[in-house]
Amino acid sequence: MCEHHDPTTPLDVAAAPAGATRSPLGRRTLLRGAGGLLLTGGIITAGAEGAFAATSQNGWTAGTSSQIPLSSLAAGAATFPAGVRTGDVYTVLRYVAVQVNATVEALYSPGCWGHNYREISGSTSLSNHASGTAIDVNAPDHPLGAAGTFTSAQVAAIRTILNRCNGVVRWGGDYSGRKDEMHFEINVGPSDSRLPALAASLGGGGGTPTPTSGWTLVRQGDSGFRVSAVQHLLRQRGYSLSADGVFGSGTASVVRSFQTASGLSADGIVGQDTWTALIVNVQSGSQGEAVIGVQKCLTAKGYSTGADGIFGSGTDAQVRAFQRAKGLPDDGIVGSNTWQALTA
Ligand SMILES: [Zn+2]
Image (cartoon, rainbow, N blue to C red; front, side, top):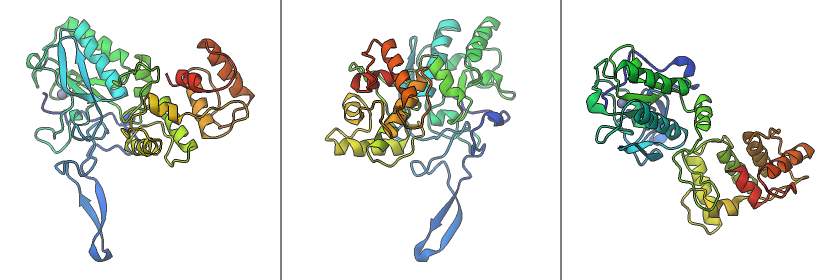
């Protein structure tokens, strides 16, 4: 496990999400004490494990393995203990690990590492390992502070991987100060659109097992059009939540409420049973949140349409075109089979 993130090479400000901070631990809080006295300026430290959400250097929420969603990661002969963050981060870091193993050098265990909740040695910042957004590869061969641990041919292969990642991934060998050649990290914040775009171009997957039923499993840590569909369907059914396309703890809580109300196991995961209970059939003339969900899925699948919640002739034409492309009856009715294909 590497010991640090070089403080002389902070996150690219241009890539940082709004509100991201390089000093994530200086979070201010408001506390109303006994008697109604308003207390301000309390500083939450990273040591307050479990109490508050701090962020790692790249702006992602840090926490223990029970606090952030993690997927197990393996590449070649190596496993990465504790895994990495579920969703697009997993898709990208898995790509990096698999490509390093295939084109740079064979990975082995122990020696590869992923999530680890702790502060950076010698500082009060949280390593990107603390948010599950960094990996170390073959650590014994690429010790912290050592430069030139890879051959020029290997570095060229690493460059190919980094170029493919379009600035989303940074290599510790590129730190301007102390080198950390074992280390690769997500170099954009959670709201940066380059990450989901890259993950989609890499085939997605997100570290979420695909069930045999044909319904794609959606759960906390995921983001994108499937999550939007879940959120709009929940709104259609009267639940209050924002449809931001990000499956956070709030969405998970609403999903559990829906599951309980539907007599399902309240695990917060949208699988076959929950999808089946959740979908609403819509067709020409329908209006509302479920239609918005359909429209966002259509657009994500390349059948661009507005997201106005009105199932008019334009949406109808796109649904029928999508159905024909998927070998479904082009009746323009979005029922179970079409919903399943739209959220695949
Ligand atoms: Zn590292």
